Amino acid sequence: MTAALYEFETEEETSLEYLVLAAQAGDREAFGELATRFEPMVYSIAVRRLGNHSEAQELCQEVLVKAMQKLEQLKVPAAFAGWLRSITVRMAINRQVRRAPVVATEPQALDATCYESATPLDAVLANERARQVRGGLARLGELDRHTLEAFYLRGESLSEMSESFAAPVGTIKRRLHVARKRLARQLETAAAV
Image (cartoon, rainbow, N blue to C red):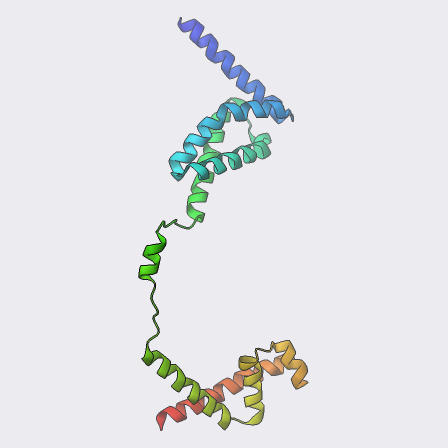
């Protein structure tokens, strides 16, 4: 009985080695047979690692594709199962690390926790700050004011500003920098008063 069992294992091993060698030689049917034999193992590792049926199925497909692409790198055909297992574990770990945590929640729970954080005081402070900025802009020189208005209020790009001001982009960047500093000084002066 032991000899028969040993003989069966040897035939199975030989058959596996034959399939791996044939698949390495480009036989797609041989690789299909390998995939059919080892897909349950790959799936079980994937579902154990990921804890999600659909992700495990997706990973299973990715692993088999990766194995088909990298099969020529396998030096010992008899080690196919261990090689495939290591690919599966590595890809499952990568997927776990890269995926965002899934948080399941009911829409009613989201509605109950969402609230408007702006208070009337926030609105008053924002209006006051906007008034101060407008006042600071009015006290700036014409070039500084036009530069800041073009960039921040009209949303012009540096290239567009370069064309409208007939100046190089580097000069526009410098003007923006200087104008921001001057506006900050105007706002500090206004706040100190």
